Length: 106
Image 1 (cartoon, helix red, strand yellow):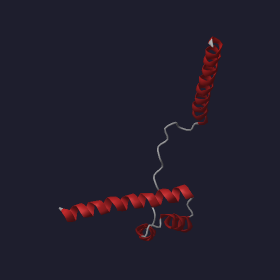
Image 2: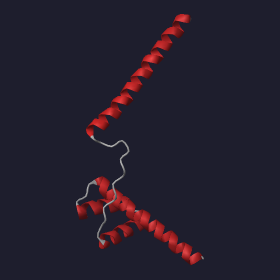
Image 3: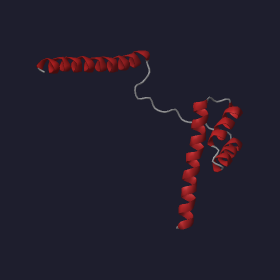
Image 4: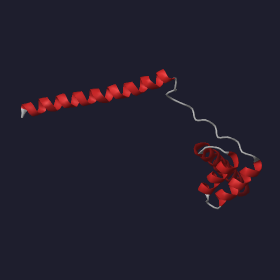
């Protein structure tokens, strides 16, 4: 029974060492590549007012995926940038709606 605990402890130490070395390797690889470890998110691209209106209409119909596809087709943006732009419009619309409701209620 004593051998079991001794070998178990050895396996545990070896396993933890492997994990620590892997994490340190990832950190140093990112630093040497110039990629920042705490990258700030890039701002969503601004869209033409007419396209923003079309996206708001699609969002009102709960057609978010359709809105993303429409932005990609209209602007040539990649999937992530188009999604970020649509979500920025969605968030702005939500804030504006909340402010309008607060004004009406008070």
